[in-house]
Length: 115
Image 1 (cartoon, rainbow, N blue to C red):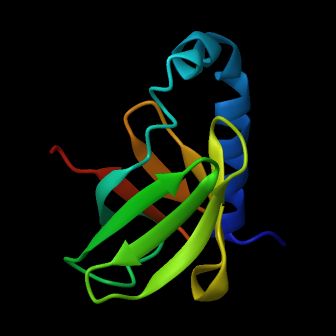
Image 2 (cartoon, rainbow, N blue to C red):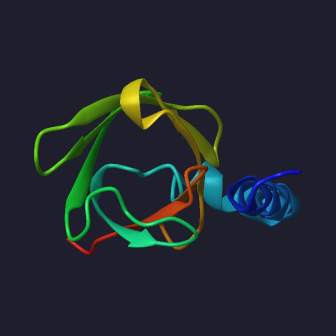
């Protein structure tokens, strides 16, 4: 039987695919792939691994570096206009939403902070 996290990720993926037509114009402008910045983890179906901490994303082409404020980091990759992956100990897949948040397969959600 699928876990709650798996079901939530599947629902998010299907939602993202359903919205991909209208989102294409936005993606051409790079609005959703502008990932560089500081994010705060918001518990969703799972608690945040670093409560109250922030995560910074830097991007070079499709390559990403995800680093929390304690210095722990993971390499990542932009895998499509609306998806990304993080490797090493973070080992998760993410969906990028138009509100500049990322829903992760581990049940957490990162919301981009205003500059």
